Length: 320
Image 1 (spheres, rainbow, N blue to C red):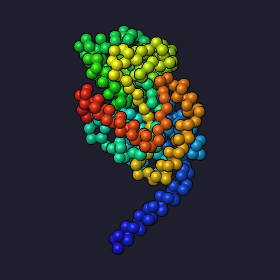
Image 2 (cartoon, one colour; image 1 turned 135 degrees about the horizontal axis):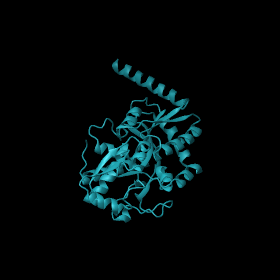
Image 3 (cartoon, helix red, strand yellow; image 1 turned 180 degrees about the vertical axis):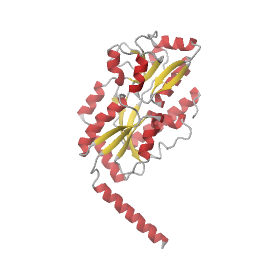
Image 4 (cartoon, rainbow, N blue to C red; image 1 turned 120 degrees about the vertical axis):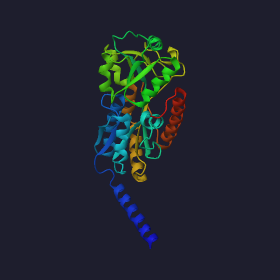
């Protein structure tokens, strides 16, 4: 009898899931973003959301939930119904760095979330106030080596923190982190010189740099960025192995029905192939599309986890 009841429950649940899928989506969707407004990740999420809405025929609302290294946004999605209506803008920080640097992480980045699509890969920039005495990365490194007190660096995501800790390990400079909830809160302090330097998304500070409100010391890419040909890479500034690309993607809860997931995957495949999306990436400094499907994105994420685990071990960062 117990087996019969269990079988009936399974049939009912399956029927409910199929019924829900047939009408999907029949209302608005949400993309939860773990950083505040003003960052490159936020801008990219909003740009993609508009195109996804057109493709699905339903509004797609972007909600910013910054804080706790991205955990607030992640847990908001993890606690939402697994029906495909709530997506998570994932990143190098939430999926690849937090599991390594945070103790007792309240989610499993692999088991709890199902990949939908890659979004973009970006270039970071090391920036200072226009009034800063540091005019090159070597100036900054030299000061950090000689300083009696660590240089304060600003960031708004754990991935950026680990990148600077890596550079500090390679260069021998002493640094101390000052975390922010997002770029909009961080950048005024950088421009006014209240912190020594910051690492941030290059696309998000393009206009500030061109307007003389920030000074770019170096970029994280393999090659110089066309929009800023005078700014060297960190690699050519004396640290050849330091190449780093933040990235973003879309995931849903792992329990989301496969039929719903398939609809989202196909919709994002169409979005990422749009000429206007390619144009967006082309016009944003240091940005490239990551039109990865679920299998390719899962493989990329696994590789990133391994890379950052090795890096954290190398620079002596332990979960805290």
